[in-house]
Image (cartoon, rainbow, N blue to C red; front, side):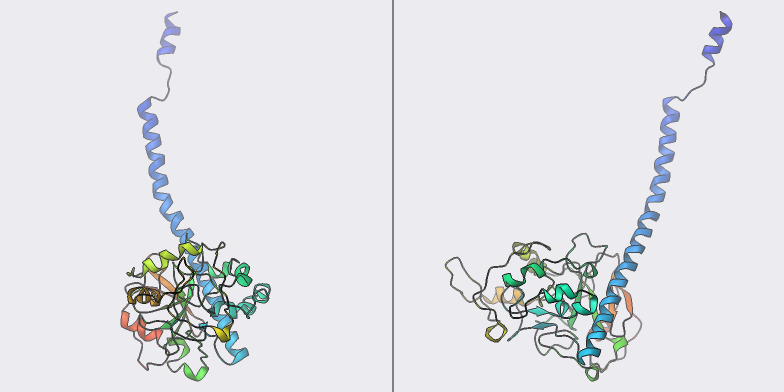
Length: 318
């Protein structure tokens, strides 16, 4: 009887303190492992993002080879372009779809009507995966053309590559393809749809990469037009290209079109810069098809030189 009692008293087992210690060790190991896993996933997303930009860059090159000019950044009868769903505003992205193996989407678009006409609503809501950065949680359109080297409205006299009614030829690329930005990232692109040649698909180098400017309110207000895949625009009486005009007007509840105040017009003319969901910078596709990740701390003047197609300035390290 005494021997049995001693065997019972010497029986081994886990106590609460030992269990907590084991759990703590497991939690520490998981905490050490998670950053490495996240870094590996982000590296894979960055590679996918670069591939998307490279694909767009090749499509732009092929477009130029086929038509001898690069596509227009946006097509409209008059400028400057206002960031509102009024006008023809056919952007550069819709023009290169056949070269991205998106022929069905291209043929579904009716070029007799503008980007906001109900006839083209289904195409505007079509999701193009090659225009989405996998690191962006917002979805939408994340690759935008460069229209100018400074913050200025989208117009016919911009010094970038893709702007209002542009038709850039090889001889116009005076700085060389390898020293000219074609397309970059924008985390807040596509607020008026990927077919719209506005701030949705065009940006400039007026500010450093990932700079959050006061014009972000202009992008936020566009939520009333819907989100990617569910845009809803008011029907326009006549948006054929020959009759379009980019007058600074908006409709009110009585159906009239009062002139915008100077403050409202200035807000709608702002374009904004480049940004990304990647830490520390953004990806850019240059004219020769090379895709580079550029730090948000890069010298702004060098970036402006890269955004200008014909300034003749030498490019340093960036």
